[in-house]
Image: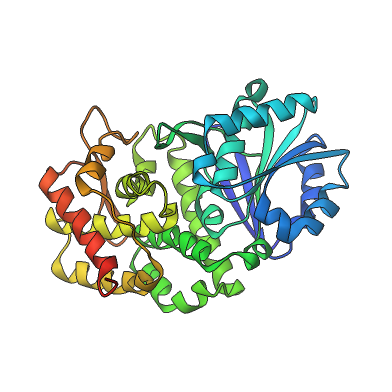
Length: 368
């Protein structure tokens, strides 16, 4: 296949295959990986609607293919959905000698990945991400889980897939808000990679937002390579290095919860990155020029973000429950330079509230 990225994790090694119209190659990969061809899949309803023919025609060649359609809404990313999936799997008499496939965005991948990790103590599974967000982020690295009591991904496990197959043809039917959602993780990763990558993002924004396949594929490959390197170094976040991937996420998860998930994850990450820049500036980690230049790049995203009102003090309290914290102390991943971050940085409440308000104002300007 044209683009292949290897993930060399401590628990296992696997490949990420990235190309256009490569979903049909999944059958050959079953043979290559010696995977059982009794297959159960959870498929996003919207993906199935647009791509039913290629999915059923391809997977119908396996010894057995059963599936469940899933409504990928944040409020469905819960224990009730997981229990329903378990019941369907048992009813259809699948066992540990099966292969599970998650076909959809991050919600499907996280949920069904958790099912694969826990059903009969672990079943081989494949990630087939179908959104920009899941291609560049959630499908790689093995994090699985679900929301509980309105806390995002608070329960989960790290369980690596047998492989990840990214067919960019699945992206062609995405609505624009889903493209923006994925761009949130691309811009976050660009900050982590370095200045050259961030400039490339700025120079190619118009092609990214319209999903030019060549440009989109390049960014997916670069994001996956970066994340693969992080996972190789610190698979289970025991060393602290993997925490850099949480840039903007402490703010983002609080914003998601306090808006009742009306703002999707990727857009919340974009707002969270802006808040992180302001907090970095307030803590004197970055200069005036760095802040101004960075915000100028993020200004490309301003027209695409719709913020819903939320209480910043409640958002601050929500941050205290973030799973990355120790005790009640909020710990942030903040920017020190392009390609350089600090993790576990603490900040006074007043500085955090200031950063939140500045992030809100950045995306509200001229929209009242």
